[in-house]
Amino acid sequence: MPIDTNPASMLWLLPLVASIAIVYKATKVRAIEPRAFAKECAVLFGSIMVFIIVASLILYVVAWVVAEQLPKIFG
Image 1 (cartoon, rainbow, N blue to C red):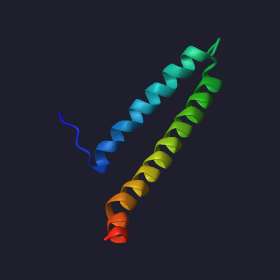
Image 2: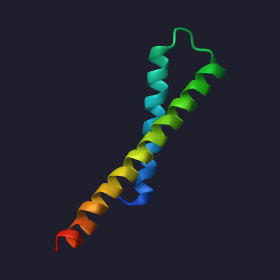
Image 3: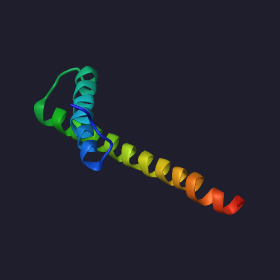
Image 4: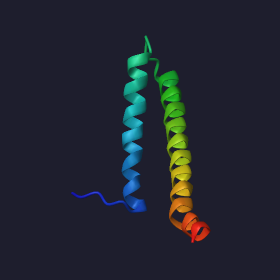
């Protein structure tokens, strides 16, 4: 199944980030308590998603400036 680069295909990012957060937290805690473990995984999931969104917005702005604005400035 090919994965395109349209906005709907970016939903595949969610289970990937969730699995990364769960596995990372499972390897870092000494004893897994369900409520605390779920909370820590949710916080890590959220922070990873915020970082990805901010990074993608920054890259989008840089690409826009390079592709659209610099040619207008330098003729």
